[in-house]
Image (spheres, rainbow, N blue to C red):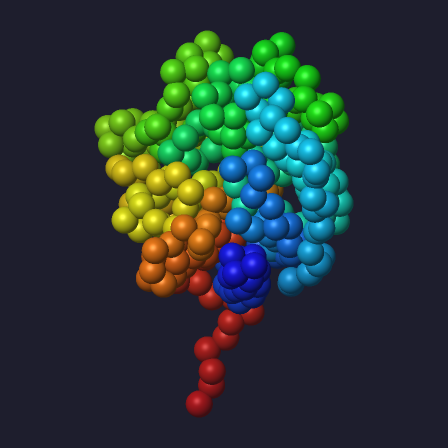
Length: 330
């Protein structure tokens, strides 16, 4: 599977580069390590996934069994496969977090954020979630017009929406673990009516592209971090959909929407969150080489994803040096 191969190479590249680019001024960089769990899966989007936890530790590839007779449940497609895959992913993330790593999930569709965030919370407790995306992905199974679970993951994770979620096969293990007040969206520009209603109903903090244009990304990031740190500083889970970036930069993705973040704005977001010292897990999803029309499309998308992740792990555009760097003597 070509996309799996490219994304696994991406994971190794990120981890190796991170190992050589740690930044001496963040205590955090001396403690973080990375391991990789390959987990190819794309049923939530009806493409490959890697969980990388950045020293480099390889956890091998996760295997997902094919679910036969995975008929739609109401409108919801592939519920059994998505529920099963996310359970395995949640267990894997919990194991990796308990070994003290920062987790980075690379690759598949955004339905995998269910397992990633669930496992992260199960291991460390209450989280703040920063969701950078063109889409809110907060449809419930009953508000969704497509039935694709990649447009629904936040609805399964929020305490406030549990009364609106019907019973689905292989989903009974999911326990809501995020409060609406601990969620911030950045980059929204394609939001369904039901999602818009939910966001207003729950009072979720949202910086749509209109707000990004009005305030600028530096102010958006200041307000995001002030908002999340107002009471208790919780570990941050950054869930970054590559389609948050404008498709002129990252075209190899499943649901591109014009008018997105620039490359520079996208990288600034990761740099700012890194410098809080609270970043505990990252999802980098919807990088799909199969959707690239040309090699340049694929390369631009993948290299941007790498740079976003390097920003998460302390690479600064001003440059970096290791804490033990010494000038050579003549």
